[in-house]
Image (cartoon, rainbow, N blue to C red):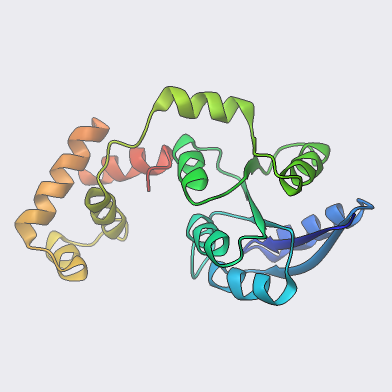
Length: 202
């Protein structure tokens, strides 16, 4: 049986390298590739892949959001998150989005091929070390609104700008930022942003 694959990565070189690598496998066929997260579902509806390999960091929609839309609209397509970032928070969010696999890009080629075959067969595949680290780390302590405020602060926006963007009062934004810094054990919002980013909570 041939396993039909969709590749989604914003870096053209990575997409081409993956295509060449995967086309070497006799039971794989790369049927489509895209460079934006918001192109994933429409492409999957057109080409009907069995497995989609999604990078996390893409324009339009990140890979985690794209995975959630894809699994809802094309349930026959299984998702593997293939990323440079082996962060515990990303793994948890990937599983919540419906991904069936999570593989880091520095994994050996045969590990990726094995993961694709197992996911296509209905299994879940997660890097064991990352799975153990995720269990040890626990869930993100941030509320959805604290997350939103930190993401909005990423560009260096002022409290007033964040408030306007999220339709919140400035005092409310300050409270969320304070909560985020307390929960991340940091001194200010930029440190909180860095810690939350490193742990995959954003």
